[in-house]
Structures are given as C-alpha cells and as structure tokens.
Length: 509
Ligand code: C5P
Ligand code: MG
Image 1 (spheres, rainbow, N blue to C red):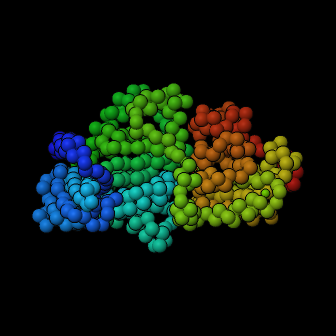
Image 2 (image 1 turned 60 degrees about the horizontal axis):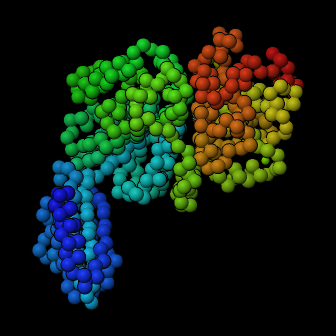
Image 3 (image 1 turned 180 degrees about the horizontal axis):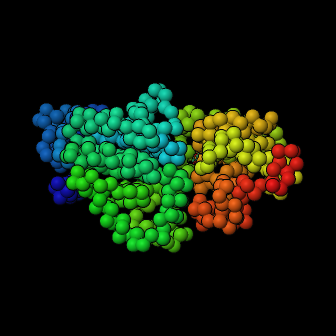
C-alpha cells in the first residue's frame, strides 16, 4: 500500500510539472478513525463551488463508492478489520484555472479502553494528570476507573469520559474485570491500556490479563505503572544485594508468562511480579525517583534490565494545563488553591507546613502516636528546642490522607494551626506552585519529590526495640532517603531523640 501511495504521489507531481499553467493548491489531512465511526471526508482550504471536481481512492482496500466519487463530501464509515489499515482519498476540484487538491489519509483503528486501578495517593494523582492532559487528544477513549483516594462526582466522571468501579480491598474488583470483558465483547477489536500502582501491579493486572489472554480481539496497547511511594524503594533496598538478580528476574518472567497463558498457577512474588511487564507488553515504569537506580550501584543491573521502560515521574503537568483543565483538576482533587493562597498571605510571617503520618508499626495507641507528632511540632515552634525553626512562622498542618483521628488530635492541640485538608495529596501543593516557605514532618513518600531546600527537618519513627542511633540509622527507609540525598545523616532525627516540650519548655528526654 505504501508503495502504491508513493507512486501516485510521483505521478501527481510529474503531472503538475507538465501543466505549468495550472496553479495547484494541495492540502493534506491525516486522521485516525475508530472502527464503526463515521468521518466526513471533505475538501479543505478550497472555495465552495467548482467548475468540476471528483474523488479518487489512492490507498487501502477499495471502498469509495461510485456516487461518492462525484459528491463534494462523503461519509466514510470505518469498517471492522483484523488490523489497522490506511485509506487514502484524494479530491481534485478545478475552478477559474486553479486546481485544489485535498489528500485525506485515514487510518482505521480499534477503539481504546483505558483502565485505572489504584488504592493509594501518588499513582492516582499521576493518572488523573495524564487523563486530563490527554482527554482532548483522545476524546473518544473510554475510561474505567477504580481509585481509592480520589473521588469522582458523576459530573466529573463524565468530563473524563469515565465510569467508576469499586476496588476489592486494595485491588482490582471482579466488577471491573467483568466490565472490561463486556466492553471487549461489544467490540470487533479493542486496544486495552492498563494503568496501575507498581507495588500492586501483579494483583491489579493479573485478574484482567489472565482472562483476556484467551480473547484474541484484545491488544494490550500499553501498561503504565506508577510508584506507590517509598515502599518500592524500601523493597528495592532490601533486594539489592540478592545474588544473580538478572537471572532471577528472567526466570520469573517465564513464571509470569506461564501464569497468564494458564499453563501454571505459580505466581511470581514481590519484586519479581513487579518489574517484568516490559518483557510481555509495551510498558512504562514511572519511578518517583528514577535516579535511585543510578545512585545505588547495586541496582545498575535492574536499570539495565528495565532499559527504556524506566521513566521519571513528572510534576510539571499542571502549569501547562488550560485554565478550565486546571479548575477541573483542582475540583477533582478537592484543593481550594485560592483559600490556601489567602491563608499564606494572612500575615507577613513565613509559612511552615508540618506533615503528619498515620500510625507507626508498633503496638501503641493512636493517641500516643498523635502526641509524638504534637511534640515534633512543638520542637519546631518552641525557641527552647534545639530544633526550633529559628524564627516565628505561621503554622500549617497537612495530615496524612489516612491519618483519621490522629489528624484531629494534632489539630486540636494548637490554637493557631491552619488545616490543609488531609485528603489533598501533598504533591498537589508542589504541582500547583503552592509549597510554603518551609516544610517539616514525619518521614513520608512526599519527601521523595519536594525540593530539598524547602525541607527544614524530617523525623523518622523509631521503635522501642531499636534504641541505639547507629542501629536506627540502618533502617531501610533512612538508608534510601540518605542515598537519594533527601536527608543528610546528621539531620536524621528520631522522635525518641527529641526533647519533651509538653511543659512549655523543651527538656531533653
Ligand atoms: O507517608 P506516605 O509514604 O504514606 O505517603 C504516601 C502519599 O500520601 C504521599 O505521596 C502523599 O501523596 C500523601 N501524604 C500527604 N500528606 C501527608 C503524608 C502523605 O498528602 N502528611
Ligand atoms: Mg504567612
């Protein structure tokens, strides 16, 4: 087909050269048409009347009807096919000694269904941004969404061309799998794009992939995976010294393949079910900190293994959105940017945001964990603490999305603490250019992405069993954050190291 088009293009130009007297205006249109959709084929950039005109088909299986050859425009109904095919139509219209040519090249493609599954914060946030950025370009794609922490009103779902499905626990529900199958069954062919959370990629993707492996009309067009947060890095840290990692990865690829083909019921575990998707499908792994695979020499082999599928998550999408799309994004994530802007400017004082966390691992009560965080805040704002911020600040609180009662206790402990809604992911502040003058708080994934110069301190949790600082420093999360340059060893604080400020004066414990 390509050769045929090329030949016709040469003939056309040869023809034009011979007719120097005729002034030819050529316009070209390239577009995709989804199967069964109608596309109006018409001349462009031409007058509305001609002395004579006609259409010819220059590529693709013959489809142009006789009556369409002599009509000014006609409706092209994309046929159902086994694979994508290009159809080319060329209009020639003459008027007043001038010739107008419109070349319309249409590629018939399968419809695309985009599926999103995530129970956490970060992947959903990235996925939402991607949808908003791409919804105009891919306006016909349907989207099936199962998100745990970002709610979509019916109105907003409609704007994203999305249908909402529940999660089963933290993972893909049977309702979603059934809906994907029903959708595929209603189409001749379907391109399926899967988007989920890297740490949970196996349990989220397997129920869909295992069933559709027997459906020959579905093509997995691509898989986009987004880091859940610090969990991936702690897991990589713990795995990095394993012997023969590349061999083990390749072996588990076979396990994955046999599982999807139904040959075996053995599942790959942990890391091995996480970083093998690119061996089977067109995959992108969006890392919160791609550079970890460089700064950690023991992970260079993984970097090689992932090759071009390894991508850096980006945070600059918001600033490039239209005004309307910015509003839509803010509305969906529930962030009142103007309100926070006013609160930041309420006084001349610089602004400090304390970031809280949920419960630590350990058997203490939520009240206990809340009190530890209250003490961290007091250390930041009390002049008698060695960890005092150094000057007076307006005090803001950004609780953990899952903080619950812990957030209420912390907020209730300070008269002048301004709340930034817990459900808004902290990264949204960065995306929207709303970072405060300084941020400090409990170690969290959020510190993996915000600029280090904004961070005043990070307090790590410590357990009763590890009382020695040397041992506490060996914690994987601390190690990862030091390797990434998020925190320097001398600045690593453990809450048990902090003076007790409950009396109003901070006293070493
Ligand atoms: O703290 P953790 O690692 O569980 O954070 C996961 C995600 O939760 C962060 O990337 C961020 O989106 C959100 N978070 C937040 N505010 C906090 C803590 C976490 O928005 N105080
Ligand atoms: Mg202020």
